[in-house]
Length: 520
Image (cartoon, rainbow, N blue to C red; front, side):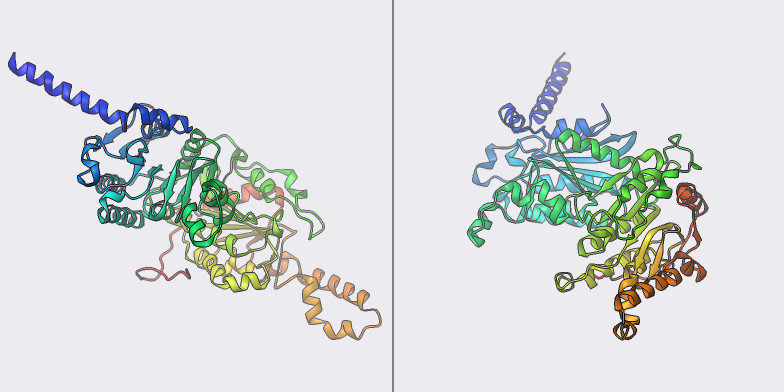
């Protein structure tokens, strides 16, 4: 009887500790979290993972600091909830910072919990998702907290290209804490709730005199449209979590697997007659490349990444015959699809992610070249444009391109061209490969003839017409083998699918080296 009573006591003690862990910083702080329109750490995990699959780790860990009054503020699990479960039936690891416990601040113990789950995800080849809501380093722990961030960053780097790493910004992320999300593959931010900045508004005002709000400085909108830090923006936490679950449907669990296939009933030989008239006859008239993409991918299902950043370039995930592919495309409807610094970096990062995770690349091209001007030159367009060259040339996954209208100058070379190891290069009859547009070329080549003419305008028009008919058509490039085929636009989808099928077992081995030196 005595033993049974002791067993009941131990069990009651366990249940009490588990109950305390579930309450985090207490009901009052949970209520305050809800009043801000925010879920708690555990509520977020329950929304993210398949129902009933979460298994928590380290729920009894407590911080060890005893100075500055923290000895009376110990909570089971400290300021982060960690564990694993299933997303869409596949294993995923997760950590969620708990703002109700000391503002979600990072202690040495919390850092060790995060690094443990990072290492488990890496060993087991499964994605890791961080739900970020933290006031930053725990000041009372000083250098121990900073050392914790260093360990987290190290694991972020070593997991890069091995498992998908995703961050969801659901509260503050300030100072050095911002660099862990920045090192992950995709950053999701919730409007009005998530903020990221190195120095807050008070410091900015003190140092520069600039008055700015938390949202203006580091909210979802500036990071999605200007800095490029945020890949996805959501109106609510639930919306953001839904986006993450959808993204993971396109991705493999690790770099040793192929992306998951999802047959969806869209015929692989489906043609689309609307594609025949989608490119305007006037070469200077814009059109929306998304209209092309939605017509060729499975069921018009395209998940755009970095949608609001560098909108002259489109990147994202889709499926062809149920298999994931990464899409890179110019957007003629914005800045005529020219390449600039931001669009080059945006595309280069996406290409490298796809290559790391065995995701084939399909590129749609319509660009007049690189953006001219002193602003771009002085900001390093040469250096940043070289990143895109490096990314495409380095990529060993299947690479297919479709030239819809024009590819001029260096921009032709950059966009998965044949000589940059593009595997299959298609062009529509409207496609043109040239050093530059006819007008500029004629003004250089025939400057003297035009200047000496009795009617310069008529002479220029005649020469432009001759240049266009003789040199500005896809058959010139095709005759040199730089294009593999000129295809009917309505057959774009079946052509891409057959090319992807042909390259399903592509193998490519480069020279032995530690790693390349991308022009960062």
